[in-house]
Image (cartoon, rainbow, N blue to C red; front, side, top):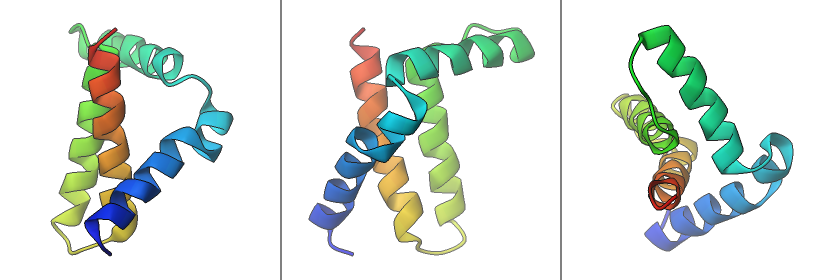
Length: 86
């Protein structure tokens, strides 16, 4: 898959059905951050959630190339950048 295709797919994911299914990214990642913070006993920010989800996708890529994980990872990093600005 070409790099531009990966980025285009990631853009479609974060602005398409996933946004419709899961709602506003900031609200969703804030809820996840609160739950992870309570579980871990450490303060987790919404952008940390996005970065850790990207790391999960990168860990999966250690087993070999997978277009879905590459696209998802790019999407999570883009969301993390946006959430860091809030």
